[in-house]
Image (cartoon, rainbow, N blue to C red; front, side, top):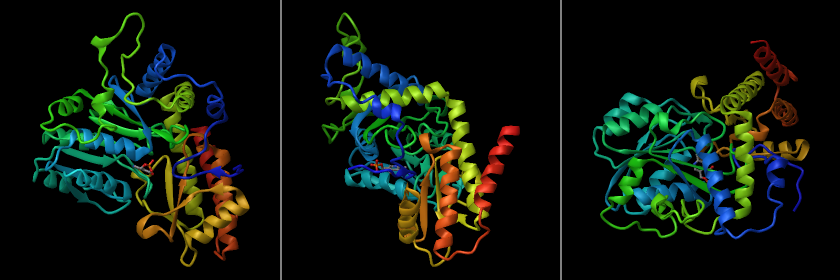
Length: 396
Ligand SMILES: Cc1ncc(COP(=O)(O)O)c(C=O)c1O
C-alpha cells in the first residue's frame, strides 16, 4: 500500500524520512552484546527526553500495552485507585484497573475544562488510594494538564502517581524527576515520531518498591515490569550486557527507528522543540478562530501543544469534512471521540507536522473544505492570522 497523505492525526503522525531510513539495516539478534549496547543507549536517550535518571522499560505494543503493564504491575485485587476522567483516555486507565479486579474510581471533570483541584483534593481525602492516574495531554479534547500539583497531592495521601504521556512526550515539557512522577507511560507513534509498535514505562524507586512488596504475584507474565528491572549486580563482565534485561525479544527495527527519532529530538534540543510545538499550536488555533470556529478546549491556558480538537459548524459532519480534507488536500486525520464523534475533528501537530508549512497547509484546507460544504467565512483569514502569529514570534 502506498499513500501520499500527510498524517496530521492525533497519533499516529508523520515519521521523518531519516527515521524511516534508519530501519533499513540488517536483522540483529536482540540478545547479541552489540544490540544490548544499542538497546541501552536508546533507553538512555529516552530517559533524557523524560528528564529522568530512572529506568525506562520498553514494551512491544501500543500506548495501552504500556498503561496496562504499569497498572497491572502495581495494583492488586481489591485495591482502590483514583483516576481523573476528563476525556476518553482517563477512562481507559480506570477500565484497566477494574479489569484486573482493582476498585477504580473516577474523579470526573468536564471534557476540555481545567481540573478543579480543590474538589479533587476532597475526593482524594476519601481514600486511601493505592494509585492516582491522570492523562497529561487528553487527546480526545486537546487539553494539556499540569501534572506536578496532582503528583504532590497524590503523594501527600500516600498514593503512587501515574501519568499517561502518550500524546505529550516529545512535544511538551515533562520533567519526570522534577515533578516526582512515579510512572510515566508513553509510546513511539505520537510526538516522539517513530513507528507504531513500542510503548514505554518510566519507573521510579517508589514504583519499583510497590511492585516488589506486592502481596500476590503480578497477574501478567508479559506485562510484569519487574521482569525488565535493571540488575546491576548481575552485569556479566566484560561489557554492559544484560544490565537491563529485555523482558521479551526487542523489536530490533523499531529500536533503530526509535534511536533515530530520539536523536533528532535531542539534536533539536528540548526547550526549542517544546517552543516549536507551542508556537505552531498557537498559530493553528488563531487560524481556526479566524474561521469562526471553536475548539473543544476553550481555555488557552490548557490548550494542547500537540493536538487541537476543532468543533465543526452546525450541519457539517466530521465524515463529510474528513473526506474532502483528505481527497482534496491530502491531509489525513480523525474525527472527535464520544459525543464529539460527528461534530468535531482532531488535528495533530506534533514532531514533523508541527511546522508552519503543515499548519498553513491545514488551515488552507479547512478554509477550502468548509467553503465547499457551504460555510460562510472570511476566505483567506485563517492563513493570514497564522502568518501574523509566526511573524510576531519572529520579531519577539
Ligand atoms: C492519551 C492517550 N492514552 C492512551 C492511548 C492509547 O494508546 P494506543 O491507542 O496506542 O493503545 C491514547 C491513544 O490515542 C491516548 O491518546
